[in-house]
Image 1 (cartoon, rainbow, N blue to C red):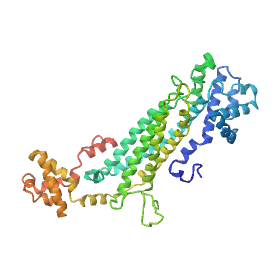
Image 2: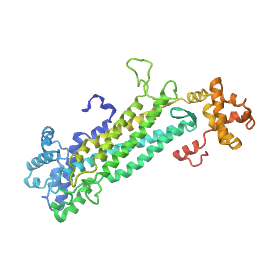
Image 3: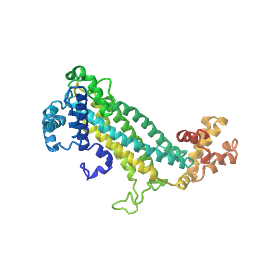
Image 4: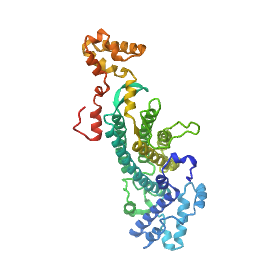
Length: 449
């Protein structure tokens, strides 16, 4: 069972929960200390074998977690008691090795770099899952490239679109976010190593060499300057994750609306899902609801990161600490969002016949714009709009097809034949550049709009 409570099944994946678990954080902290001791040894500032002695401890099994948390309440962070426990453990092997533990570093170096290592693991998970989501969306776009449906504005029927076009919009947005994610990943996955105030003064002339060694051993970029009180890279990354969950929440919202029985154009595809405790007939949009619930929490986390940016001087007073749980939570939520979106995209059931039936049930009214556009060059835009407004109102009052009304209006038949009216009111003939837009997304340069 998740330590977070019974409802956390919505808000993370098992893989991301493990990546940001207490055990994973302690291992990441231990990797930093191992890399630092190894770099100090290579630079002649630690006894030979110091790095190897810490490498044996990278599992962090020596840590007394209960004592760590208890002491952290007094020390202000877990790094201080962690280093104490580590030093005591190493001292049991060698007093000489213990003297170089954490040398030149400060608590923030340890905690920030450990978080970067966890973020790297988390971003690898996200990258793989986003790729899977893209593949699922692309398959649906191709399958429904020509599936005609109502477009909807202000939740009201509009001219037709294709379901492929609707999904292509989601796919394009996911791809844009993936590009943003790659950019911000490059900026965020950097070593933090600056010592007490960002000068590495305690290491003297060896600071640069040791920093390079630590970055190399951890396979991280070495920044041009320590960033301990400049949090823009972390902040930007969380904003991108929030954009991603927002895109997927919009995807879920659209599918949920199309799932309403009175619409009935799509359905979540997993049998047995979405039941009601009281209504046996119901099939609730579970994945869609989860996507929206997840994103509802993300803007608050993004705002916390933004609020925490003006950290005082060389170490933030409370604002740095505000990030500690915020970043892991954002990663957990993002991973869950992608997971639900994959499930939705891969298993989505689409009902093209219902889409056509819903168009037909509108008596041609969503195609009024098509007729108005055809008449505008002949009688003027304002007159054409007024004519179709009148015709649409009459069609509703008479409960008949718009075509029947238009064919009885001399103002229309003076410029359009009955065949032309029928052609204009065929939804397949009023898709504009929909197929061209889809072609760009799927990479088919030969398609015609």
